[in-house]
Image (cartoon, rainbow, N blue to C red; front, side, top):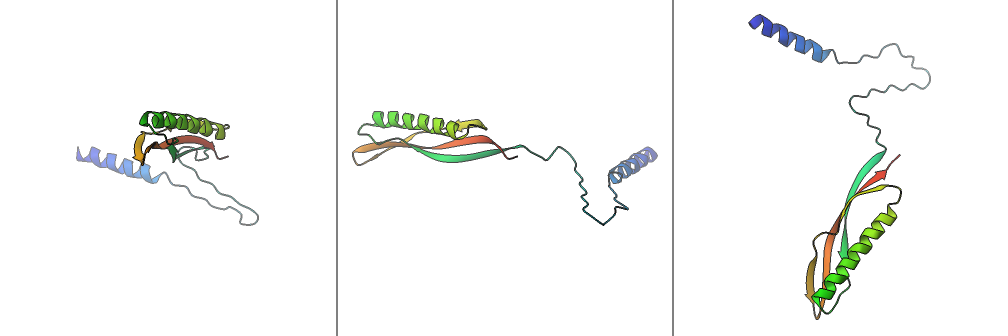
Length: 122
């Protein structure tokens, strides 16, 4: 049993060391490029970008009107984000949770909007 285990371990060690690359006898005159890549292709044509924006509706005297104004602002933000990103793809966009507050006699609703875009880099 120990012999079989010893052979298995030595086989594993020899296989792990066999994954090396040696470069010899390449002329140094002129332009020479050596490229070694392992794994998946690293040349990404697209990149995923994410970020945040503030969405704020117009102020109103009543909370109900302020919420309606925030919904309009949210729809406008989504439309603008899609319009700016015509060539690429919008993966996700969310206006976030609306938070309303009263400042003086007027109410205003705000939120943190998030987005994810697929942007072409090459």
